[in-house]
Length: 290
Image 1 (cartoon, rainbow, N blue to C red):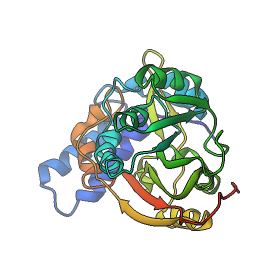
Image 2: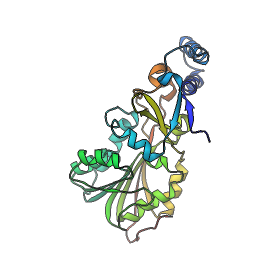
Image 3: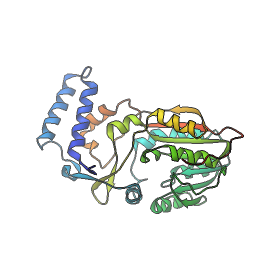
Image 4: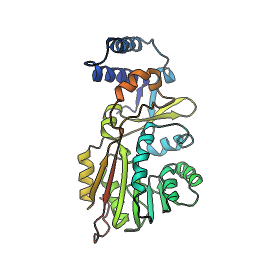
């Protein structure tokens, strides 16, 4: 599989999606603008594109997040902006105890948990991300590890949080089984992830790499049925599912700002993330990862 693609093709895809979704109900000026922009971009004209429309290279999760760590918290993200209010409302329900922040990244949920009085263990595979998280939440404990092999004992935490990370796993089963293994009977899991709609349409997790290049870390489509199957296999009971939608924020430094009208029309009312809550029934021992 080719691990690069071009910004120009991404722009054409966004324009086409906007046209497809609104062809029946948009005014003629909007439709004409989309067609004109498609023609211009296809001809190598039109708006300037990041990297001049050059190839966007793939990085694995370790290299990608090492590169992204320095600016991850400095750039606004529509995914985080719609996800955090939902997750934080769920955190507020308590009860407070020992919490795992799995794939903690720069520690945004670690900080939210410690502010609510939890004793927190943050786990991430990226030492660069862990360094950022330690600065953000110095009172937490941090360990290096992977979602599929968490460095925690069975039945050792009351709450496990995992935010926008499972999408990088080709298969959800091992990651969700590990969350189930480490929570105590009666404990909760709060799991947010990229919504399969937006992954199917947009594909990859694109970010500014280095000074002005673009790169991506691969996302995988996990349909709701796949989550439900993984939760069931891990012996968990699903309690809630939330699907907050696009809020109009376009990623700065990427290609969408260059075609803002088309991008906002393409993503309007599409869910960006999916947020699950699940519980381990009382009396159930830890479940080994598959």
